[in-house]
Structures are given as C-alpha cells and as structure tokens.
Length: 242
Length: 356
Image 1: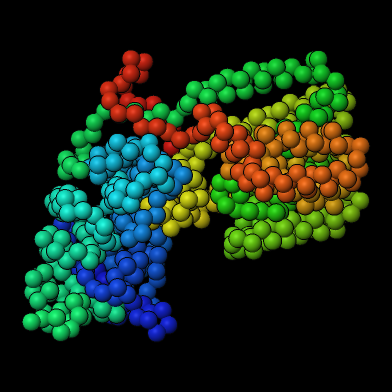
Image 2 (image 1 turned 45 degrees about the vertical axis):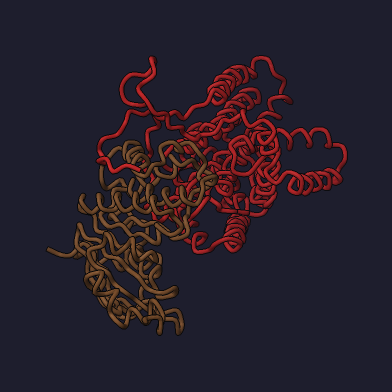
C-alpha cells in the first residue's frame, strides 16, 4: 500500500536561499512525524509545498500514491490535507462557529458529513464551544491557535500539518493538545508536526526529523535524532556540552 | 479540551434570523405590496422617479456584491448596462419579442458574454482589474458605435414596446424596476446566507485561509462576476425600456459605474443596507439640487469626499456603530442545548448552494 504522504526529491529555492534540498520522506496513516530545525530551516516552507501554496522547483509530492504536485491549494484541502498556520489566519469578521463551518463545508465536503455537526464536534474537541458566537477577530492568541486546529479538524482531514501549534501555550495547555493529537493518531490520521518545544514533540511523535537549510540532517527515533552530534551542533549550538 | 469521539455531538441548533431581520422582511414585503399598486394611484412623475431609484438600487447592489463582498473593484460595469440596453433593442425591435421575454433572453446571452470577458478581466488583479474592466467596456462602446445594424454612433430608439401604449409601458417598466430593485436585495440576502456567501465572506477576510480550507477562490469570484454582470444587464434593459432612446456614448458611459460607486460608498461598502441608504441619498440630492446645473456634480463630489473621510464605513456603517442592536446580518448563531418548544427535529438552517 502506498504511503499516505510521500515527498520525492522535492527542491525549492528562493534565489540563493534553499528551503527544500532534495527532500524525500514518507508518512504512514496513523503516524506522527515531528520536525525540528532552527529558524529559517525551511520547515514552514515544507508545509507550504505540501499544501500547494508553494510550488517546488523539482520533485514530486504524493498523497496516497497519487501525484498532487500540480494540484491547487483548495483541491488539496478537499483531498484531505488540513493545516494549521504558525501565524493564525482567522476570518476576523466572522464568528468562531462560521470560521469552523467553512472548514467543514468546503474542505470537508469529501467526508459527506453534515457540516454543522462536524463543526460542533470540532468546537467541542478543541474547547471552543463557549466561544462559538464570538467574532474570531476578538479571540486571544491561544484561542486563535485552537481555532486553527478546529477549522482543520472540521474538514475531516487524513493528513494534518501542524505549524508550531504549541508555541506560546502554557504547560497544561500543551498537555491537553498532546492528548488531542494522540487521539487523532488513534483515528488513523497522519500528522506532520513542526515545533520548537522539543520536549513536547519527543513525548508523542513516532519519528523525528531534523532539518537545516531545507536539508534533512537526521531522521529516526526521537531520542536518537536529538542525540546525534550533527543535530546537537546545528540545533542547539556548538560548545555547550560540558 | 476533551478527547471525546468526533461523532458524539451534543444537541444544538443554528439560528440565522434576528428579530430585526424578520421585521425588515415583513416591512419590506408590505412596502412591496403597497408600491406594486402605484400604477393605480401614482402620477407618472412619481413612477419615473421610483423606476430610477429601483434600477439604481439594483445596479448598486450588484457593484456592492462585486467590490464590497468579492473585492473585485470594477469600473467597467457600464459594459453590461449598455449590453442590456442594446440587448433589449435587439430582442424587441429586431426579434419582435415581448419585453418580458426579451429580458430573460438577453440575460442568458449576456451571461455568456460575461463569461468570455472574464477570461480577460480575471488575468488582472487589483488596480489592473479595475482598469481592465473599463477597457472592456470601451471596447464594447467602440464596437457598438461602429455597428450600422444598431444605428452606429447615432444609436437607436426602441419601438418594439410601443404596442403597450404609453400608460401600459410605464406600468410594465415600473413593475419591472420594482422587481429588479427588491429582487437585487433579496438575491444578495440569499447569497449571503448560502454557501457562496460563506465563501465570499471568508475570502474577504483572508484569501490564504480560505484556500487552505478548500474554497475555490477563482470560481467563487467568477460566480459573483457573472451574477453582477447579468444583474447590471437586466437593470440596464429596464432603464432603457423607460428611456427608449439608446446612444452608445450614454449607454456605455462610465457615469453608470460612477453612480454605483457613489451610492455604495456613501451608503456603506460590503453591507446589504448600504446601497439602499446610498440610493435614497443620491436620488434625494439629485432632486433637491436639480436646479444648480453643473454645481450639482461639485456638491456630489464634496459629499462623497467628506463622507469617505468622516464615515469610511458609509452612512449605514455610522448608524450601526451608534445602534448596534439594529442588525439585519446574515451571521448564524450556534445555540446549544435541547430543542426549543417550537422546533422539534433537526435544526433549521440554510440550504447550502453548490458553488464550486
């Protein structure tokens, strides 16, 4: 069976700045891949390549073995790719309920579920039910991050791309988030999770990938990857080990 | 946060009407019923004024849909006013159709023309789109000015409605104007409660966010462009059923779009109430300042500049900011808990319309 997601020698550069350097990996359904790397390592660009808001210079991206490299953003969303943005993109003039309803009505039409039921389920799951009729523009940063997740979940994705969703959250909030992400894995979603909070990532991901300048430095079991000298020097800086 | 299964959902219902919107619907229908009888009691001056008001209201609603909701700032909607005018002439005088039949036929043909012009216009964005739509309108004006079949630069006079008699034609035109005026408001209200409206309001706030949630931005905007173009064509046909004399320089004049923009900007961009308020103000100013000659245009300009500086959300925006409880908005509200005594069964709601 084909992997849920496959990147096949994906390359992308903006002039001399390389954000993806012959990047290849696969992700299975029910698997969580954590991605770490310093700022500017090309992590968000990698998600943009998967969602289609960036086009690669070379290489292919496959969903369920099907080449989606030429597919526009909205079609990939309808094919089951959900994502949360590092900087939330709420529809500020619409209520939280409407924001989530959009995910359920458009990207979620593939699932055949009633959009309003899917919306209420996603709101309940992310703890936003009490804010359903609040204008999204009036939410706190934490609730905007929840809203990003709720919108993606309401679309019933098969592949979920999380871009620093735990950044800025308090410890107990991170724990609650991890519970949700574990449950989603149990439901068979494939998840790519970019995060700077390595501790949170290591506790839940099946595999960890470290990147820098769009290049894969190491990939494998989280502890092994974090312990590798190359990752330690790039990600944590040199000369800090006693 | 909880991790309950996604299928177990507590009971809920969605309400999309407010007391104000229900009251507005009732008042609107009563007003429509009263106004529909005007040919029996109103003078021809009164009816002509209302014909102008309701056709301008329809044009402004269409421009508001384009610019206020879809972000498509067009200054070329006069293309469709002119096409509607000439479409009416061809339908009634050349094909011998009754005006009531000519209008749906011209609407269908102009929908296809709009689809063709969209191929050019939609290659452009922002200010380039605005200028591009104007260029398209000029192309139509020049083409029609050179066509001997429709009177070339001198234009034509519609005679195919003469069989109705002066009173009969005035009454028919009046009812059509009433229909297109109320129809444009109902159409926009319905769109905003539909799936298309949900998509429009989303991409107004964030195109990137809308795309990543599966909204086809291109097809959503195209749908609005086609609706607005056909709406302007129908309104244009009714305007010229009243005026009868069609000249290319007047029918394809950018003045039509300037009026639409003036009405929408002073009333309130991106609000269904905006064009209603704006058209009332426009007609009111024109009636009171008719004797001032060209000074009237200067006053209109000063009003427009003053309002955009002092009330950037238009007069209706100013009013709503002062009285927020008067909301006719289409925003649905989620209400949790078991059904109310009145509403058993599944929650009532809008029927989503297929867009893309």
